[in-house]
Image (cartoon, rainbow, N blue to C red):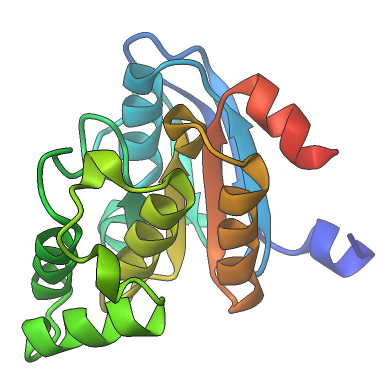
Amino acid sequence: MTTKELTAVPTLAARGITVGPIAAIDVEAYAGQVTLVAVEGGQRADFLSLMLSGRMAPKAGVVELDGREDPKGLRNRVAIVDAPDTSAPADELPLAEVVMEELVFAGLRAPRRAMRKLLADEGLSDLASTTMGHLPAEVRTRVLTRTAAARKDVDILIIAIPDRHGGDIAAWSDTAHAWAARGYTVIVLASAAAIDAARR
């Protein structure tokens, strides 16, 4: 990390935020980088992602966007990817249906055609009818991150505990870094063990 990166204002910064079962936590995340945050349990991931995205006010502390408090800006610019009780699709839904619904939410025209193109681009056309609960973990994270990034104004992605689905840690880490390389600010909430493994 360069001196410039260390001294730049973070895109998203949380200072001493807490609510419910969350102990006070600080987070600094920068455009073009992946920030790993250790969190144990789905409920904690949900609360933390909601606070970081401006969708829940912390009991204490502040969340800043580009150096200032801006809850509306956070809601517009932050997408929560696959949080267990917040944004995760039901396991029984087929991949094609989930992708199309996400693209409708993103405001894309002709969402059915866009869904087919996305699946073809990702080499997943043959998995269109596969339910989310039966998808390989890396496919689930990769597709849900891409559909979240399709939303207008979104440039901050919070990927919630991708390690809970099993699979290769390098796969979700690669997805996070691929979006960071495109200029997105990427935050991954994962278990401490998964984060340790991802950093090796």
